[in-house]
Image: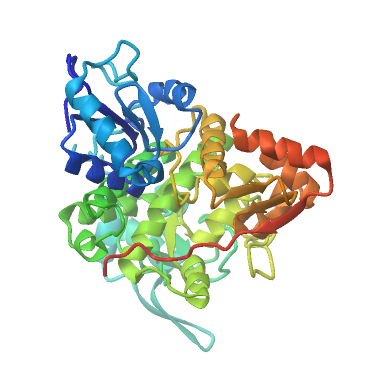
Length: 490
């Protein structure tokens, strides 16, 4: 790819984002043509998004220009007639760049630019980490019986209190305070009363059993090791994790953007670094997050967790595997286990039943209910997936302007013909299955659903056509088949 510098010759400009398979496919095709190619990452340069949309009328990436001529996205490039393509290539190679060529970024990156994922993450050791390390070596953790049940890798309230006083030389008041901090900071959890909020350590009875969080039996992908860093701000951590795994994903995408080498990805040292960082989610603080911070945090974590799940378990290939995948793949976040289903339906949809779910994800006594957003957020459905013909020009979500970013993602999704097709002659609108599965989020009736779609479309011939169909009345709404095919190269 060319550097961003002035030149008197023509150029092909591609606006893209990292991890977008359609962008990679377009760039691979253009590279074979031998044209001067300028790749502009609008993830790193979000200040250009509005200008690109103004020039193209589209919210998706990639967007491709030969000099100042906009040809569209990847599918438009692939469908160009050979003669037409040849003319464009000749123009770029032989004619100078016109004054109204599409913009390139300034040399200085915008403040919203992506994190430098190559820099080392600095872990500031938490003050309680050494206490936990000594506790593991202190012959306190063992098997305890309560009634007829044996609890492995556990210790009682009194055992911990005695150890802190005897081995750490603490007065009783200080030992009780440390026990409370170990609970609050999610280093340990009470064994009994699963799904209940932990009682205060000082108010617990002497035979109350505890486990270190790493010893609590669950299947979370970031479990089994204690997070020893001082808690990192949730929004910061989710942004970094998403950037890191997306870079890893991009590095293992095939040149044509059609498949991912998950096997090679899982053996990469960068993936090991990602896993170490994901452990720090265990004790992240969630309750003080604003609505905007929760949206950005959980969307980024969901998208990263899907890729992590593919790496560990492989991509699901049938309906049963998909159901199991979304109900099983999980992270330990802030001391609680969150599956993909919990994040989407419990947190981001305001604790609503998901597809094929008989009950809400969180019961009234579930501590995760405190984290759930008060209402369903319909726009999240377009941030948790990527359209088949083009992606939103956003790869990670930030609390600043999260609503604008989500609107852009919805616009990008609705531009795709596998998301929305308007048949004016038949008075029919064909929509993605997402609108069928989550109809309640979009108003619950066909009429309200169509109104929502219209309000969230960018100005385009498709929007004008939809307005016409709705105005004519008696619009038929049907749903398009959903493409579940995997993009794994193994």
